[in-house]
Image 1 (cartoon, rainbow over the protein chains, first blue to last red):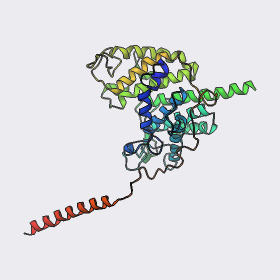
Image 2 (tube, each protein chain N blue to C red):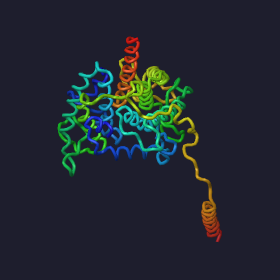
Image 3 (tube, chains in turn orange, yellow):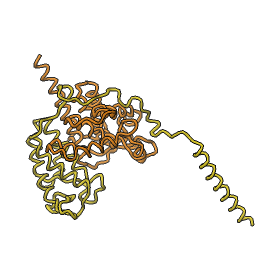
Length: 201
Length: 170
């Protein structure tokens, strides 16, 4: 809906879009509202984080007073997920689910890690802060190390911690590939701007 | 880009589950893919022509399926058939909308950023710092009313147990 406004200039749905986004923020201002904690995975939280980033990147109207800015909301998701980076299994990566009681806690899925990569890359691009770029690289390298993305850049769906993520779920969904493509494009843009700035000096 | 060539059937974008049954989430995947493709075209210009060509085909194919439902303009799931397949929902609307509006990617003013001095969204590098992962939800303090309610429930259970045992003994 943010893109609808961004592409068309039609503001008809901006108010309802704003309302939906703000409603989802939750008490901790991290897109993990209490009514969703039982089912919310890292990927679900990250989709809201990416939406907040889109709002920042397209200059969507800022949220009402008392609510953190779009950038701050995305940074909150990023900061929380960096703390969930788990090197005890598969040599790194995020698990699908955040809570041990949820089905999928043992699954390190591509989309959770892809969304994290996407957010890190776009935060680097928006803020110019290298720390985000470092995390993006770290996330991408880990995904490649587990063969979730193989040598031909085919993107699979994820691996289980029981076998150290060595066996990939071979399904190839479009959105897994897309989230990495966009993150990589953001990194390309981030680096080109660096090179351009160096050239100017 | 090259590895995603297998996502197209006769040039039209399709999701692997469309060979069988897609769940509600999966019905929206094409929306994210197209959103990410359009953003890629904007961020990495060398991909632009390839992407806009694919988006144009997707948009035309998607639009052809938007003939269903009561309104007569609800979109179908499969874009490869050229007709509405009767499988309609929010994911299908999102996907078709994203396909069509992505055609406008060249008309926009481009992304802003704090780094370029064009983006003004308020940030907080420490956001989310105080949130503990161990306690997803805080419990409200226990009140007298809660205790009274718990007492009544306990009493009812006790009566049930005693009554049940008594009826078996007698």
